Image (cartoon, rainbow, N blue to C red; front, side):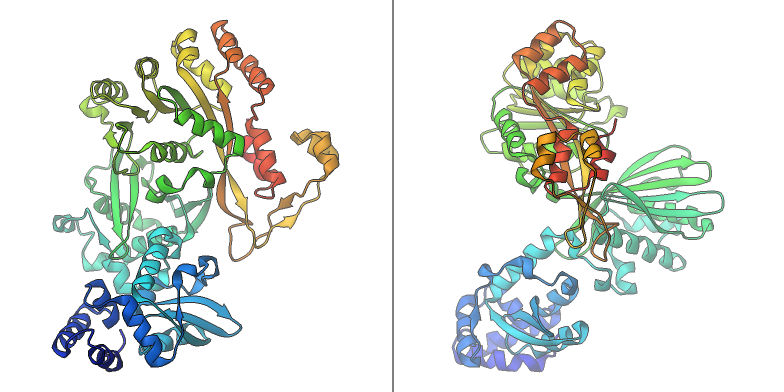
Amino acid sequence: MAPASSFHGLLDLIVRHQLLSESAAQQALAASNSEKRPFLSHLVENKLIDSKLTAQICSREFGIPLFDLEMFDHGQLPTDLLNEKRVNKHSALPLYVRGNRLYIAIGDPTNIAALEEFQFNAGMRTEAILVCEHQLQETINRIFESDSSALSLDDFDEQELADIDVDNSTPSDSHDGAGDKDDQPIVIYINKLLMDAIRKGASDLHFEPYEKTYRVRFRIDGILHEMGSPPAYLASRLAARIKVMSKMDIAEKRIPQDGRIKLKVSKKKSIDFRVSSLPTLFGEKMVLRILDSSIAMMGIDSLGYEPDQKDLYMHYLDQPQGMILVTGPTGSGKTVSLYTGLNILNTTERNISTAEDPVEINLTGVNQVHINTKAGLDFSKALRAFLRQDPDVVMVGEIRDLETAEIAIKAAQTGHLVLSTLHTNSAAETITRLVNMGVPGYNIASSVTLIIAQRLARRLCEHCKRPDSVPDEQLLELGFKQHQIDQGLSLFKPHGCDKCSSGYKGRVGIYETMPMSDTIGRIIMDNGNSLQIADAAAADGVKNLRQSGLIKAAQGITSLAEVSRVTSF
């Protein structure tokens, strides 16, 4: 925090322009010091002064032009300099770099300490840009609440890593010794790994014990990468610490357990982890899945649907009844597609209920039920209960058996919109899976309205991708048409740089969206197979997964190798 003396100029200015009385200003200064918050931030947060008027006065008094942050392009932000702890400490935001000069948005022009600290850490000269403090705070909150990748381990020293708060821990947890001083290195190591996983954009963390080694891996963009190898003798202590954090029974090591961690990484931000333990030959393997609540708010445009595929999904979401099935293997992004659809449907006019195992993301306005098979609450029971509560939209996490399928189909036939998932390789195979479960063909044809098969492919890094030259014969083998090749294809391949992982950064969806047409309905009624259904869909203009993937490759979004990897089955 900047020293109190630096605030005297601002305090005098506020009193002189009668924004506050001298006694009120002195009290506010003392309160901001005790809260370790910048003086101006304290005044604005507590609505003691008008932020816009104060900014205009500061602009006149100090001869600095006032900049409108709402007009600023956030794409210019120097992400490598966005240290959340430092930004909040000084209420100062690095905006952009020009040459060897860093321009910083501040609401308080007397806050010289902020400029000096950013100058020291960035290694370049700093220059202040005066902005409205209220706008500045809103911008800072928006940046750090929406982008978990902005978190950096540099934000935390060793003691702060040890003190990161776990919401669902209780004082009684410490009796096992996992909270003792001797175990503080374990606490710091686990917290550091969790923070590093968030910063790298990982989806899962794997803690794996073996006979003589121990391995920690992160799944980044769908691929596992080894991130550490602590001594094997620490296996039980690492597992115990994770079990304490996730409220598991640390004495039970013979059966699998499930838990959940809510990690508070700042006053306004927390990250959820779903935790699973599995007894193995040499100890307990622990897997932590990072649950990103922002996926529910991503919007359909960011998922990777082609325009015609997006229009189909939106059309059938707008229908009052029917069944939309999303299919694909584990980790193919089915949950994201379903939650995006639910978020579109989530209005005050609709009664929405979901049965999930487990509930991954909390959605305000949606009645979510966590399946508990031990207590006798399975998908079919939850679905029956939903239908007694006048639902408009029902989501079933997964159709696993005939009973659940029959109830879901009956709901779709009686004026409800039903969303669910299945584990199949393609849209056509989803039909045969339902038939094999025992669902009559006429029920499938009359209730299922849209089937979406999907995969997640890694995006090429925009900073280092290189043009790829592929022989025409190979392009034809992969699935491109001769006229596409004749028109010229701009294909790219990964290279690798310090901004990505092996030439890839992020993932994009590849989709097959198959509506239930009259032709496909007749094939189902005639007990046709998945090949016949796929041929009929192709005749109707439905792009299969490989064709959709090739479109992404031709757009330069992903590589041919990645398309082949995720669509080969």
